[in-house]
Length: 402
Ligand SMILES: *Cc1c(COP(=O)(O)O)cnc(C)c1O
Image (cartoon, rainbow, N blue to C red; front, side, top):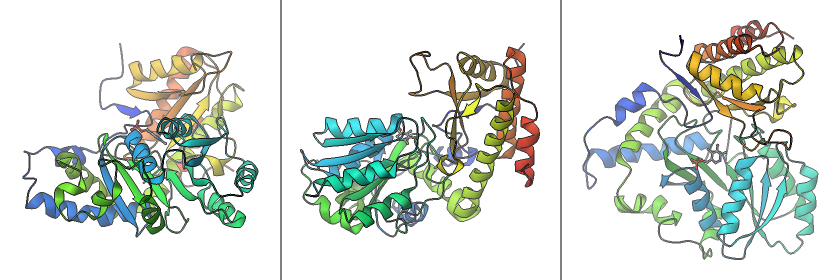
């Protein structure tokens, strides 16, 4: 017997669960791309996209995934041979560095492993660059592999204190519309995101927001090719220029619906607060489980450095992989693999898993997922401390245990 039949919860960190409303908005015949309702609808998307990122700057859309967003940012930021300083806190930061390197950018990498960035190391790297050869600092807001969250305002403050003129570019693919983010107030020049995580829309759209200064500096970038050039995409006077060809028509209808839900109905502060509470519930459960089994622990010790959209945790190998298998086949909850978390003793990463709490998730989904994990630990005989579900419920009820 399996208890998995019913509405599943895909709790891998992307693609995230999509609202039925978003899917229904996409369910329509092909619209005319030359005039009419599609143009009118797309005109309404730009202001809401700016609101989501907290900017009055420019925004470009691409048909593509998160990797396309990285490539778009790189193409507009750099010329071949330019220097980038990449601050990696997990697999995704390393991949952005790889993409830049493959495009001919000279990458200085500060690899923090799966831990928060040391600002001292960043300061030393910036001060060592007295000639200001580093054109941009690339950083991941929340690295989806480690679930480390970077303190972007602190990084900006450091760059200002050092007096380094590099542009600051932030990958918000995992965090946008989950974790609080204010591009302009935080002094960010370039923000990258994609549709399939906090934005609750199928994979297929990438977004790059950019400041006036980034727009200005991009004019000299010799990596800009026609498809990636963000200028016509953000200022094009003809509709086809906004997408460098046929618009991703159905994704745009889905995105419109998702932005209605996030920006116009729930409101971003409430969206952030929801993700904050759901994240706290997950952390409370892990804390209780860990009290009965020292192998169970969150990857990030300091709550200030934990992403609010995904939680990466260790359970000891092979418990994490066994539990993931059980929750999927018996409980309808698909948890994320431990990405980039293999160790010499655990080459397959069977000791790590990730719980996604991004996008269209609510209290019953999160408490249900935690309860299924608890059941799986019981069924598999994985040692765990008591009280995890009580602790998570107390967070949701608004009075967490001290
Ligand atoms: C998912 C993700 C990516 C990669 O996105 P793809 O759509 O898989 O290309 C990059 N960075 C972060 C932080 C992500 O969460």
